[in-house]
Length: 596
Image (cartoon, rainbow, N blue to C red; front, side):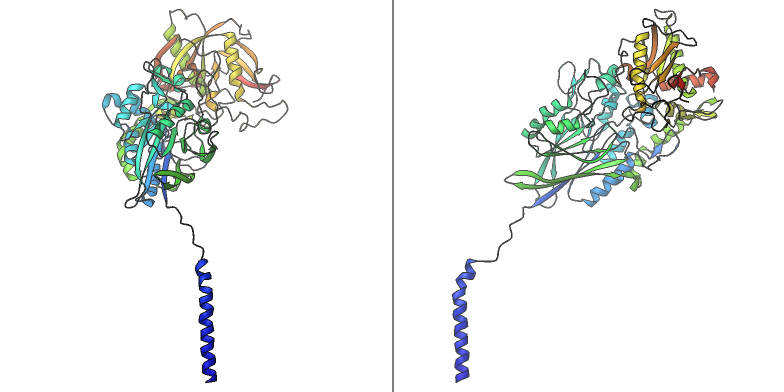
């Protein structure tokens, strides 16, 4: 009895204790975890400055493309990366954009603009074929889209299966956009019943077109400031329902220009991000830089704008990733990041190769045609800092063409000078057969030949400006040809003259370097009021590089492409012999002593 009644008592006490604590337990339940908002994600892929590269091919060396860093090039490589990411994200939203400079830059692109222009044949441009296979969502027009004139540009745009954008290219007569300013893409973010996201894509082209392709656009198009244009259209896109705003801009982010203040800023991407509220991200190009990820804080909102640039020629693909939440019908970006992917990690996409195979083969056959025999090997490797025969070849042909064109006219009595730049450090005319690709490798741009009249004072000022290309190297210190030039000045913005003799003293400050400037073959100083006809390419004459005194009315402008003039001269002569054109007329010095 005793033990039994003791057990019963303990049970009663246990029940009572449990009853006493029950309200306390109910009042303090275990802490619940906050409900996490549902997230969705969006990926935007970006290319830029593909410059006519479809195959991973160097038409100038007639071999697979390679460089010191083993980069690859071409839309076919980009397509493989894009297809891999699309497959990885199957069922999720992925957009593909391009920031411009598409239809110029390789013999392939030149062939279908000049040899068999698509405006005449009706054939689909190779860059339209390749990009349509890749299924872009939009492309922005770069400045090089205007190189071949508005009719060819219009034909190419018609051949694209997606929109071409350029909000700040305006009809000169009406002031209205000459091209589509923006698109708003409605995308499903994946999964059954997933909400839709409206992505606004604004395209901005480069104002420098007004200088660089003045002959093609003057009186037809004007180019508004990229920052002001973004400020106009971004709020409009938001009003029209864009949940996310992305800009595809053909302009670098340095905030500087290669020309003077007469045109809006050439490289304003960072300024756009800082000054225009409402932008989530900017894909940019033009500067040919690899910028995987760069955030710029908007000065009005404090929001960080994601920016990225995918190098050049198809060497990189930008990948932007966005994480979003949705509350009360409004989207919020909670995270965003970017990187650039190297196309040398993948093989070329077979569908893109197949689409362009015939055009590629035709171009390879064309550039391998022999045009002349060279008596010796001529190299451009030293043309930046030594007077070389291969650069004199350009100046000789330009001088000859202009002299013949002006014969018997008002300017026939004036000496003809010529300007050329060392566009390539690798160009070579081999001894023996010289092919079209060798000439094209020396003169890689589609420039045309023009001529203006300069005074002796203007020639000297021009040479002083050009001489800023060199670093200051004091007398008595070693000269390293690898570091002799200022990296801020590209090779194509260093010009050499033929027709006058001159010295550049690289020990002196910029602006005081032309220590000797005399008439050709004499020691007679060039008089300040002397007059010369100067042969020059259209890019420079229009203001490219902001050289002084050269933006003048032409005394010669037959719209002849310089590369073709070089080919024609070589074919007519049959032999390229430096004895016919090489006249050493300039040198680098320090305190009068030649550097080399």
